[in-house]
Length: 436
Image 1 (cartoon, rainbow, N blue to C red):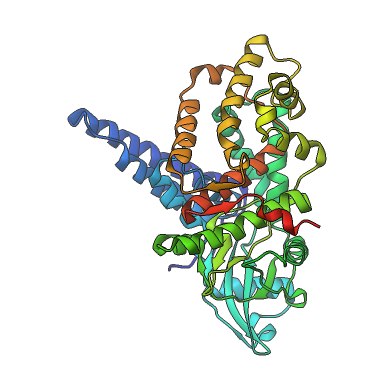
Image 2 (cartoon, helix red, strand yellow):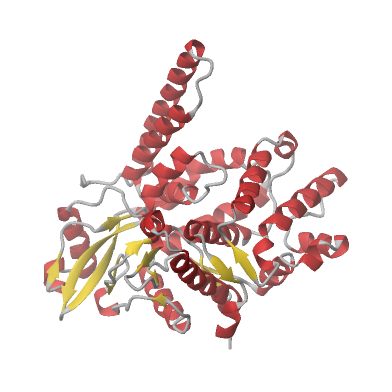
């Protein structure tokens, strides 16, 4: 794969790259509508494919938070056209890596030494490359190691990247007023945390220790003496990325085994630790030769405060969903309904969230759930499509819900998709035995 020697880090350079991408997308639309005049039956598949490729090509050279957005969008299979999902999913672990000279320069800056001075052997070519960093293979004292190196300028560009994205997001989600700023602050804070490898090291060691008793789940060992602000060294564990595994696996028992470990891992974190790995995409999980699940990235950890946790999971209860008074109370507690809402907004959002939650919380309504259920995921996709076309929703104030919804909903959405890919059938109460 072609390597890169420079990443645009200042605001002007990064904005310029996005403008170029915008021109390409505009050209694709002109070509599409010109061709449609000749062929009225033409669908948007080719347009989506061209746009996805041009947008991804623009973002992959920027890396950082810009590419992270593509990574997050690749998880949204129910709404995003498949062409975007396919292309953006490359950002999970397969983007152009830094060149060897730039890698050596990064080591010299943060360790005062070149990699060959720290390790017995060090591969100059990256094994995997994602949105914020890339991974190299190394050895030391007979141990195989994975060395994650952060791209230069990632942390410094987050704020300016989000400033550029904000006007589009505000229009897309119909956010109004000062209250919308809390959502952007939440995203910025979490992205900044992901660039702090000392914090990730601490989180990795802590969560892997607390989750060590969960069956069929493994974690790498971490090496603080070979880690710094921008470099993280851990044990190398052989395995295939979850997305590669699901492409070829035809053994339902293996899917069930891995899916159960995944479910127990997330439910134990959510209910036992009140903090959760909030970046559940395939690039963050490996499957080893014994069909164990390996969690390899703890840069994005979301703490779940009780004032959010309690009403959130009460809304997952059928008894609350089916009780209009209690349901209404929880909507206010979670800031889905607001004191300044008009009667029309109260009625609209109450109905909308009742429909959403009645469907999305189904896995919690029994002791067992089959995530291969195409009807369940088809209904989620259908509901998402209906909401994107709802003209009444566009007129409403889109500032809905506590800021904690952003990463908690993202976590469950990603978890559901991973379990669907595995075609896993899970015991939804199994995690309870791990909570002391």
